[in-house]
Image (cartoon, rainbow, N blue to C red; front, side, top):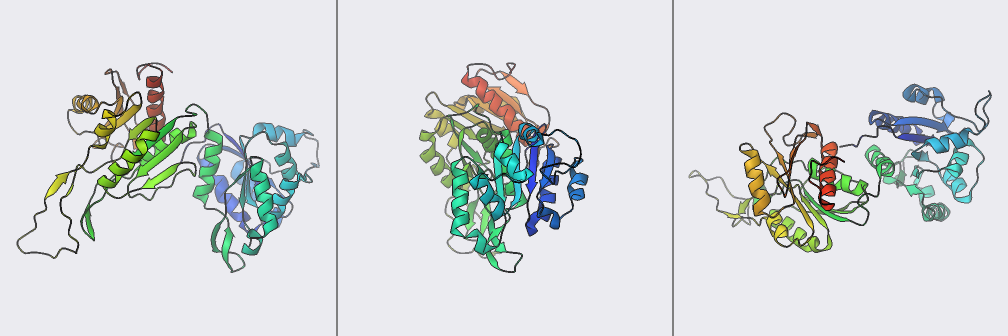
Length: 408
């Protein structure tokens, strides 16, 4: 899942690494998300790629030198620094990082970094011996001390054939890092938000379990949206292949009991709980310690009820906020309002998995928000990121004592 970057401006600085070709995919990812991208290439980068490649991808001139051959705005490095919401150096060589750390500004990219008004991110790529060089490490530490960001390289096979650290970070990590920088606000600064997401797996025996089709996308989107608003976020999630922002603290669990224990432990240190997980209502009472054999007479499994995590949290919330979800296929609003009252929730998000685009494993959702006073807000079909923002808008209004359908 990826956030939209509409109306955001990103400068990508490409330096002389064999990983320079990967900057093409990074550029396309950002443009597809709605960002406007401009590219700067160092002289060494042009040995690996032609500027025409990025001009074709972005529709903009690629800057290749500090001094243009024709008459343009002479303070172009200042204009670009003012224009950018983020500067991403990808790939960033040890040489460029050393220049930035010592304040050298002898080409357009290093001059632009020196003049930057926005977050600057370095995505390093180099051979492993360079990546473990203590001087390189000290340069990175110095830049981080002054607020520059790093998307640390990964370990793997390098261009030289060696194995080790120095491989450019994945496209997903790079996209997440840029999104985090350009979308961050302070609307929830100082708030601590606890989110649950995904399914739980209830074991029958060591190799079989009972679960559901939840992907966790809605809960992950809520955790990311709260993080982007400046909150300290903890995400308790069941089995999922989703990744999230590095700034979101994650706790991985398997069973409903494990999720209940995690929430019980963490809830006292948080201000808001958003329960988006699809927690199993029942679990096998006595799971087998060994793989169960096929039996001609069939199989009977006894179940016990799991803890209602939201009801427990709602009973002990004090002046804190608890948000729940109601997945209903009939009598939706009536059932959601009943859950809202019996679980002592402040807001409930009603959705119907049988509606097109609103089921499990989709990237969209259609919900109705109902607050503690019965005010409702029907949302149209939206991406789960957009839905998450509407939910947090409603939470923000409740924090200020306003009904969820009040105008922003």
